[in-house]
Length: 66
Image (cartoon, one colour):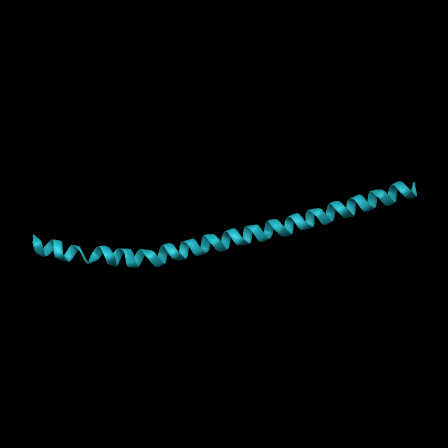
């Protein structure tokens, strides 16, 4: 029985050592995913603002011409 316990104890640190890089990789992937979403949102917002400005300018030109 004591042999079984002594054999089981080293497995816990081994499992933790195996899981740590996996969890670290998953966290890194989530951070990269979040950064990409933020970058996309920023570009989308910038494009939306530019489109709104262009539409306003065109409508102002139409009012002045007519």
